[in-house]
Length: 113
Length: 113
Image (cartoon, rainbow over the protein chains, first blue to last red):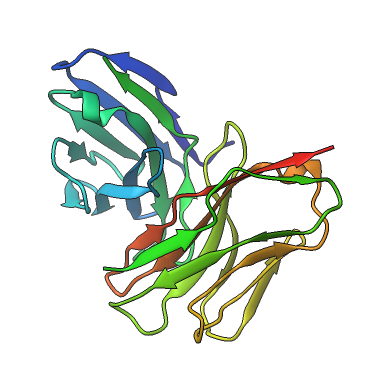
């Protein structure tokens, strides 16, 4: 009954390959987010979306694209994966605006070799 | 920009001992940011532990407490007696005027039985 799910939970990719991380929420929230976490850093916002078919750049969007085909689904796309994109990626959802609480998925551990 | 600094982990304490995880913030974009503590248990996504939106107020949840101190720009997390089940990673965060949430690097807590 988890409200935010992510797939895959872990992935090993090759440099230069394409990677797609998927996120699905059942919270009926308008806002969805993609963050990455690296050792020694807090969560950093990559992309977010407040409505289907529209995405916005976060603080570190370079090298990433996002897609929001429906209210429930939000994908993060690495067209040409690089070593520096090895990290744990978290998806989250929230109600209107960046409200008091964000609901997170369990994370995807991505390793780029 | 806005930032959050918290105790660098890992922090190891024995069961029934007291705990404090320090958090200080710098909010240049907003005078009174909303402050949060999130927790991530093994294998799960982040979840909100407590929040305080008014300076001088205290938030509490599951035996944890944090007071919003505007003078010292701090929001330390405390618990009088920890349990083994409190072992997790704790994140301090603030919501800035750009409606984004800025996270600290996280503090890993290990509670020994």
